[in-house]
Length: 147
Image 1 (cartoon, one colour):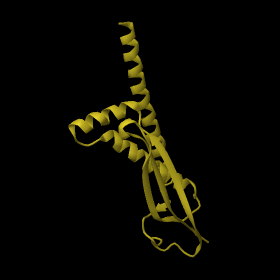
Image 2: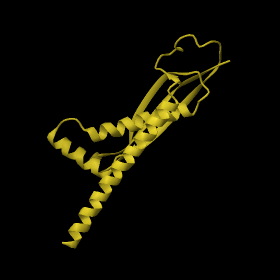
Image 3: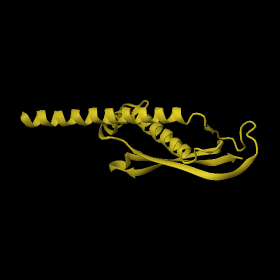
Image 4: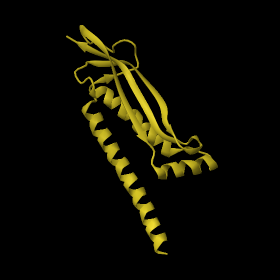
């Protein structure tokens, strides 16, 4: 009986720690997005609006690899059996995408705009039975600097 209680306690601890760390990461993302909100980022191939005289442009990128925790993997497995939206993977992709874009913006804070933004995703680690373990998101674009 003691072993069962210890097992349940460890499972609960892992679940709540995972939830806490995800919420903390989202809070960090939201704070950094507010700081970089004025850096225009677009998928357009040309600058948006009248930016003035362009001094130079450069390729910039941001990369993020986020892994799914054990408990979300279990929930995703259950969802695969019963069907429906796999919210645990949606948050994984959302956090990865937003983090990659933030890292891209942080790499060029003096740019006037980032144009031609592109996002690539891939599964970095496949667990047993080809389950998703980690997701990599690469965001890249062209930083436009003005004189």
